[in-house]
Image 1 (spheres, rainbow, N blue to C red):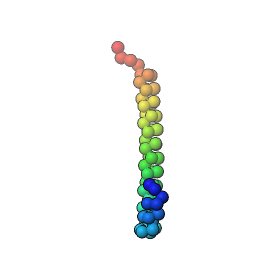
Image 2 (tube, rainbow, N blue to C red):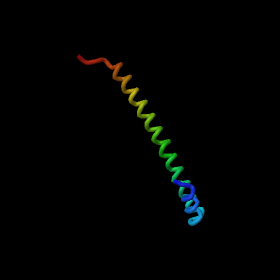
Image 3 (cartoon, rainbow, N blue to C red):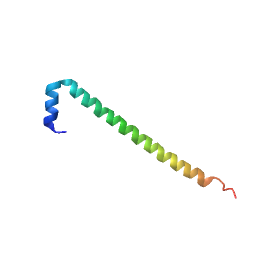
Image 4 (cartoon, one colour):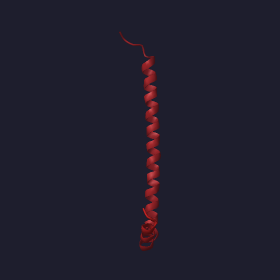
Length: 60
């Protein structure tokens, strides 16, 4: 987003526009943090599953 557009929106709409952009930015940060945690948990679960499968006796 260009700085001219940002200044125009802020001057026309006032602090409400700034608040909306800030809240959207914070929501994006929270979403990224949640996605990172879920991905890490998925990796751990895959590793645990692999370890368990390797240690189980194989039925013949």
